[in-house]
Length: 124
Image (cartoon, rainbow, N blue to C red; front, side):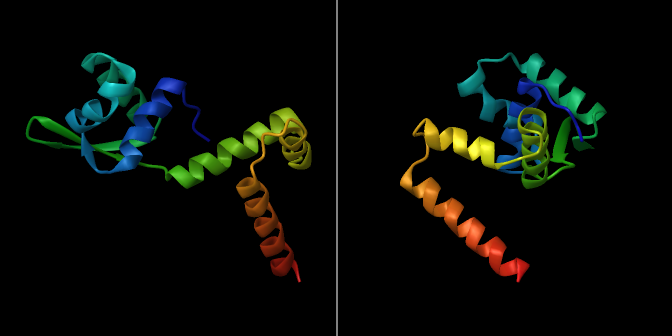
């Protein structure tokens, strides 16, 4: 699994919104939220290419970037790593902690019930 810094993730997340995209398009997407200099974003794009998280094609003077990993795949792996590190791979303590702190909305509870119901149906 590719390890990303917060800044690298922000750049990749901006690309996942709509790709392929030029460096200029990615810079524009990030400019309001980050206030990073253009060179900083280009450096981060270069790092992501070296980590094989992005690929690029050169079109004249522009670089066109495409992610090498899907957002859903990255999110799943990061979630699994997080749960393994903090909860020894068990999901129940994580959900229980949120429930005890009253951070689960009714919508969250309904979605969790549906996920469990769907999983139980698949196991039969």
